[in-house]
Image (cartoon, rainbow, N blue to C red; front, side, top):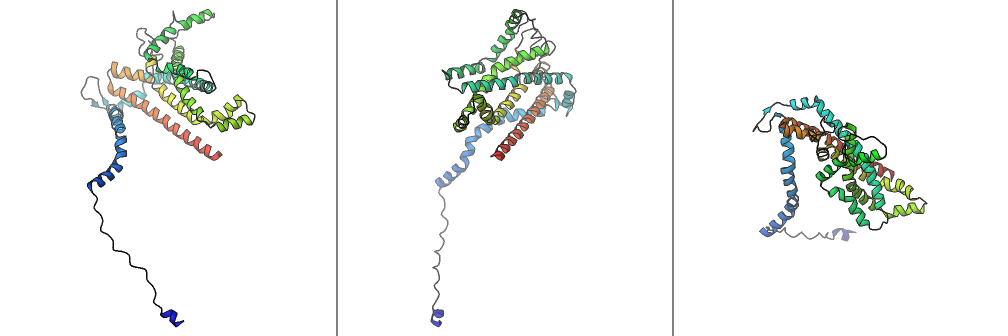
Length: 330
């Protein structure tokens, strides 16, 4: 026992002395800087371009809305929020906003329904599928000014094709370009004709991304095509449909060209002789470039921008709720 206690205890070897830090060469430092800086250089062109054509005009418009600024003046007179107070009390602005919402409601709902139905049809085994898809997209790539002129003639009061068809059916002519509601319907049809194909391809891409296992499982369970569409396909399209609804809403709030070129009647280029189909953007154009009041036009632009921001926030909340509901159901 004493011999065991007297035996010396072995100690671990001492660590080697630390080497002095090696000095990096210029090439090594350049390589490290390249790894850290390169990602920012790759995305810099987008932010530079966005700052020039997006952020700067947005901020300058907010600055201009605080001035009584005429079109040909170099500087304006600061008036604070008077443009916004005048805008909120402007009956013509509220009329244009009502017209914009009316055209949006008449166009967005049917447009999305038809887009989903067309996407479901194109998702089946059709002959010449590529040709059908190109045909659906042709209205989107057509010249919008030409489309507006053609539809303006189709809905002409005296010699329009639509009124001729109505007379053939024994119905009365409709004053499409002077009646307020009828003009909204005609412009909504024009918007639907142009944008339905674009939304169809978006919904079709989402349909083709649905796993085939789910469809085959529904077939094995005995679900027919209609039941598979409403019970399997449509619920999985909810995020895409929300995206389509929001983009359609934003486009509807910014509608300009369709009502601008809808009719060639005198005094109707800004939304009709009595402004029966004048939209917010047409009113903005009139205030800024015809009346020459840049400050008031900037206030209109910012109110429209705030409306779009509110819709974007609603879209975020809806998307977040749908995602959380889907995770809770799993």
